[in-house]
Each structure stands twice: as structure tokens, then as C-alpha cells.
Length: 307
Length: 253
Image (cartoon, rainbow over all chains, first blue to last red; front, side, top):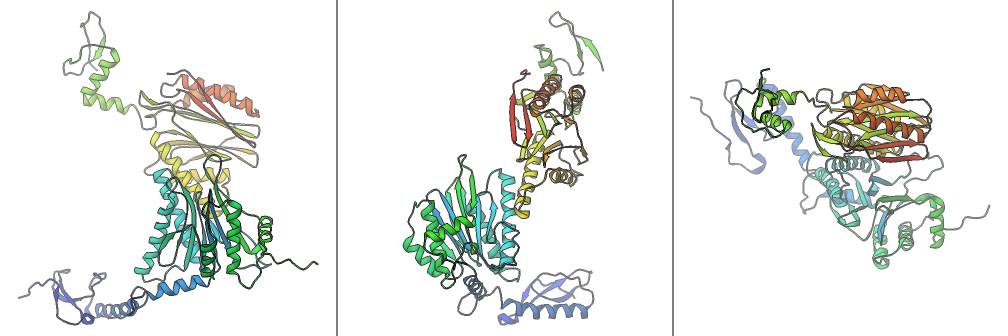
């Protein structure tokens, strides 16, 4: 007589764990090994099914030990490696000022051959009230930026108002976190500094790293030499500074991140976020002339040899 | 229909017989009629069926091209069939500094469709890093409407814009059939009356002031003859220098 058994667990070590269940699909009951993943394939013949099963288990065992698992020391190695990638990338800075926020970045490539198609290479608009600087793998950053833009518009469509800054940051971080745990794909190698405004908390500054972790800041730096820049910011930053003081601070800390090369205006991008007379966020990129002035004012610019 | 004469207050009126017997004392013709309608489900369905979904909220819009300018005007009423609910209901939306979107039709779809177009336009601006040309926007309206071909937005949009100084004026049915025009377009429950008046008063190459004035006159006259439109008006005139907005006071009926 055939009898039905549900999920009998055979007493073995963890690595040899096997479930048995009876399949009643074609009216014929057979004992089948459960892959623990849910049945995807209908049983065709014993031999072909067996082939799928063993291949799958082999692959999944190799996979599991890489991206989504803890190391023996309790670390998520991929996350740490991704953070390393950021620390080797071009810097980004953000600072809150009394009536707004400033974002600064050093451009990746400055070449005479480069044709500028976008207004900015590193500072992006997510919605009218939120901007961000990217550091790390640009392509990953671009993907997340488009993703965030879609989310911000979805929110605007549903609620008929601008998304709150922290909410968007959290949504992006949720996406980053997803890839540290599911999917079997690599992490996003992108870190951001976000500057934005909402009526709940006014102007705010956040950063996020590849793990999906985020924090709020008064001023912060990411990318190459961010430790030096952050330490400078910690000493020098004061609350309620005005725009000029803020720009000085940002530009000085950017120069800390470029220890050997001499910064010129075409290597630096600066964005200022403030409110206009109608209490709407207005964003302004500084032009090359203004940046040059700023660098001169702070004794950063190395004077070019007269031709 | 059955007719019988009521002799209640000594005044005889023809009343529709519900076949159920009279419940209400006659107060006013409308009140009693409405009362009877609500009492009788069958009659109520017939009554409501007369109001299609396009005419449920009421409204009137008109767009007209002038010399290097374009005007778009709308009434301000939002009604639930014959009852007026609001007199400040927005029907024209400035999508960009050179694009206006006017919508007539079902009130909730006016709100949602304008939000959908704003959504598309915002993402376009961010991703393509440029403004949208009025003609592009006009086409996007058409394709967005068609994407809901089998559960449509019950709106009849008008797009008015200025592309390199040249006026753009397009209109659509509710599933996206695009019509480009060089003169004027009308929409809403007052459309039939607006057509006639606009045809009579339209002249080509009006300057912005004349255009605004004429469009205002046409709108007000048209709305006066349509019970579902009116309660004020708003006239937008778009020129290269910017957008001017005028709020009209009309007969409050």
C-alpha cells in the first residue's frame, strides 16, 4: 500500500539535509527529493529531473558562500569590499548652511577630448527638492539615480507633494540593502551624499553607502581621502554659517582630498540649494568663473604660469 | 408614460405616475419630482442614465491661436449633475512655462490625468535633461490617452503651447485621437454652443490683448447657455514674454 508522508526530516547533519514529500501530480505518487526551493519543473522523466536537481544543488551551494553570506568572522565581505571601492573614488562633500545646503564634487575625468553633454557629471537632481553627489561606480550610481527619480515621481503622483528627503534616502537604501541579501547579484558600488529640503525638517544632509546604511549629517565627505576631509570638517564646521562661509569650507575640504594635484575650477563642481522668495527650492550650479574666484579666495588655486 | 392630474392643492399638474401612490405632499415641483425619483429606483436609473460620464461634472474649455500667441480658457464649475459643488475647480494646468494643458470631462480624471502628465514631464526633464517641446508634449498626451484605450480617462484635453514663437494648439478625444489646428478648439458640455460663437467671432492674427478679450467673451456666452458650465472663468494667454492669467466674474448660475 502506498502511504502519504508530509515533510519527513531525516536525521542528518545540516549539509546533508533532505526533505521528502510525495507528489500527487499525475495521480502517481513517488518519493521525490525536495530541493527546498519549491518545485519549478513538472516531472517529465526521472532521468531529466534528476539532472536538473543535481546541477541546481551544486550551483546553489557555491553561490551561497559568496555574496549573501557572512564570513566566519561575522563580516559581510562584499559590503566591505564595496566600501573600499568607494574610498578609492573621486570625492564628494556636503554641508548644511544657515539657509540651505551645499554639495561639492571632484570630477572623474578632465580631458580636452571630453564633450560635455550634461550640466553636471557628479551632482544630480532627484526631484526639485533633492540633489545628490555620487561617488563610486558611476553606472551603478546612474541606475540608482533613475530608480530614485521614479520613486520620487511616484510619491508626487500619489501624494501630490514632494517626497520628504529622508523617505527617499530610505527607499534608495532599501534597494541597496536588497542586493546585499537577495538576488545573488553584486552590490551597488555607489555612495551618495544627499542634500534636500522638505517642510518637515527643512534643509537636510544625508549619506548612504553600498550596504544600504545611511546617516544624517551637518557636513560630511565621501570618496578618496574622506577621512582627512571629515576630520577637517569636524574641526572647522560651525552651525549657521552663511553661504560664503559654507562655500569656503566646502572648497577647502575638497582641496584636502586632493593632496598632490592642484585643483582648477574645471575639476570641481559646486551646487547651492536655497529657498527663493516663494519658499520654493532653487538650485544653482556655480560657474567656472565663480569657482575660480572661490579657489583664489581660499589660496587654493595654483597660479598658472603666464604665457 | 402614464399621466394623471393631481388635484391636491387645487392646482393641476401633469405628473409622472410611479404607480406606487403619492408619498410626498407637493412642495415644489423639483423637490417633489426629485423625491419621487429617489423613491423609485427604476425612474432613478433612467434619470441618471441621461447623464453620461462625460457630462457628469460639466465644464467648458476653449483654445484659440493668435499672432505668436495662444489662449486657453475654462469655466470654474464642478458639479454633480445639476448640483454645483465648487466654483474654483482647476481645469487648466501650466505644465511648463510654454505649455498649457486644458481638460474637460470627468472631474476626477481631470485631476488624475494632469498628475499623470506632470509625472511624465518631470521624469522626462530629469532623465533627458531638457525641457519638453510643446509638440512633443502634445504627442505624449495622445499616446498616454491611448495607453488606456480600454479603460479610458474620461477627459477631452486641449494642449496649448508656443514652440519657437509658433503657437501650437491640439485637441483629442478621450482615447487620444490628435487633431492639430491653426484656429480654435472647444471642449466640454458647452462645446456645441461654443463652436457656434467661436466660429462667428474668430479672426486670425489677433494680438494677445484682443485674443484674451475675444476668448473671454466666447467662453462667457457659451457657458451662459449651458447649465452645467460657468460660475466664473479663467483666461490664460501665452506669449513669448510669459503667461497672463485673468479671472472672469460671470453670472452666478
